[in-house]
Amino acid sequence: MTKHDKAGAFSPKIGNVPNRARPRQADAYNSRGARLRDGVREWWPYYLMLAPGLIYFGLFHYLPIWEARLAFEDLRIIGPNVWVGTKHFAQLFASPTFFEVLKNTLIISAMKVAFVFPLPIILSLLLNEVRSGRFRRGVQSVIYLPHFLSWVVIAGIFIAALSPSNGVVNDLRDFVGLDRRSFMTDSGSIRWVLVWSEAWRSAGWDSLLYFAAIMAIDPALYEAAEMDGASRWQKMRHITLPGIVPTIATLFILHVGLFLNAGFDQVFNLSNDAIRDKIDIIDTYVYRLGITGGQFSLATAAGLFKGVIGMILMIGAHTLSKRLTGKGVW
Amino acid sequence: MASSNKTRMERLEEAIIYSVLIAIVVVTVQPILNLLAISLSDPARVPGMSGMDIVPDGFSIDIWKLLASHPAVQRGLMNSIFITLVGAILNVTFTAMMAWALSRKKLPLRRTLFVLILATIVFEPGIIPDYFVMRRLGLIDSYASVIIYKLVNAWYLIILIRFFEEVPEELIEAATLDGANAFQVFWRVVLPLARPALATITLFYVVYHWNDFLRPMIYFNDQDMWPLQVVLRQFVVVGDKAAIVGLQAMNNYEGASQIDLRAFRAGMILFTILPVLAIYPFILRYFTKGTMSGALK
Image 1: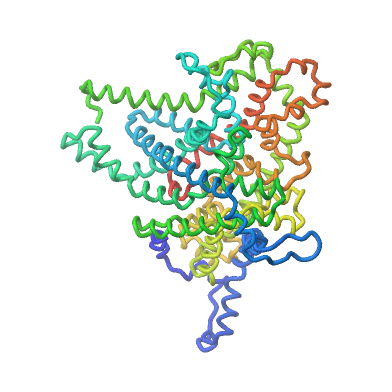
Image 2: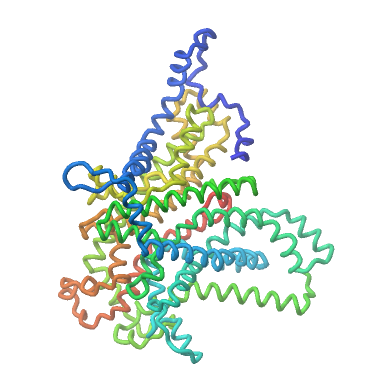
């Protein structure tokens, strides 16, 4: 926000002065009541504009926090719920399924950070080496597209492309003499399906963030390097890469902050009975427990567990990011 | 930079870079083109088609005609359009009003409100409490539930606040001196200035509503209210064959006995993508200017 504070150096009183400058009596203004009245008269239009949004945040973001007390209660159809303390949390932590699901969440997130996270960086570096603006823009306009497709659509595309009988992947494998494999139902490969479908969807779009950072690098640096006879590789290594390190750091930290979000929409649509135990994550577990299974209290407890750990990770990520790059996550 | 005597090494590097990028483009579009080819092929020849084909085998628009006349698809399309349009209009209206007020640096309680809104990004109690709130408010089985669910997205709100903070105070001052009140300043001065930013978040919201499948699945018990994504999910992911070739469609369509499910699914996936493709040029125009890249994601 610091960057914008500088921009806000223009006189602060202006946007708020009502129609015409009102003469104020100094003594009246200094009294609390008068100042409040003055503030109300000055700011009520803005609060009117804020009102619907504030009501929305109250109803749909703060009321759910109050509703989350269900994690500490037994649900009753008739009459008020019964307070049971940490019973559901005890049940959760005693269940092997919960730890399986937690493990899957961590493994899948880790795989994505390890294998998907570097791709947009590499992609942006490659795009930066393209001299033809038309070719570069053409490539960019294609690779951004998957980001705007829903996971239902992407699941449909991947199910078709990975089909053992007539999907492009197996047709290619067949072409080079490899056996056809059912990746979608194979417990050894399904996590890789998650990794590659995530890469297919987001590597292109995420490269935009790095590319924007590269564009912001001072061209004089490249010119000076060229005068010194620097090669393409040396320029990339010593100018471009250092130039985007802050962006890499910020996004990496954000990924860590969102580590427990292993991708509900993705897993939900790519899952099937054959491999569910390999990719069941906290979010899909909460859904199955609560929405499908009706075990609302237990599901809320699991969701709350994720919410609290996620909050700690997010605040940690923000603090770390602020310390390292001077820029927070938000 | 454009020295004519490139070394062999440089030319090799260039060839590698271009090939890698072309390969990425192929990997991105080939699966989609394959589905397009399958959906436009002669239904009788679809079973023999490979996943590598990107040219239709024979030509027929039977699948598309069947899709367009399928009652579940028609209803899904209308539901999706309704939810997306109404949702996006309300989203943008309330996000813009809120952002404008919060962008005023002297607004009393500004910091407190900011922190309260940011807190909703940091802590999410989960889908079950969300569901119970909807139930408590009596919004289950109404379109309002999915429309209101993300009425103001905190991330987009922050993008707009940042944008509004840059609006030159002189303009606001001038309008105020001309006798415009706070609402008139917002409507006549601020909103026209913010057109690119508003267009950007409008597109974000449109894409969000169009692609949302989870909330309709949770909040609508009535299948007639399902948007296209949920219908698609039923056809493609769940593989509900009875739903695909509904009795009604069977009776209406002579060739129904020969419907190739693979072709039907391919067509349905593309049918759902089409509107996204239609607004994609605008997305490219507004999103990729790089001006807001820091705030994206």
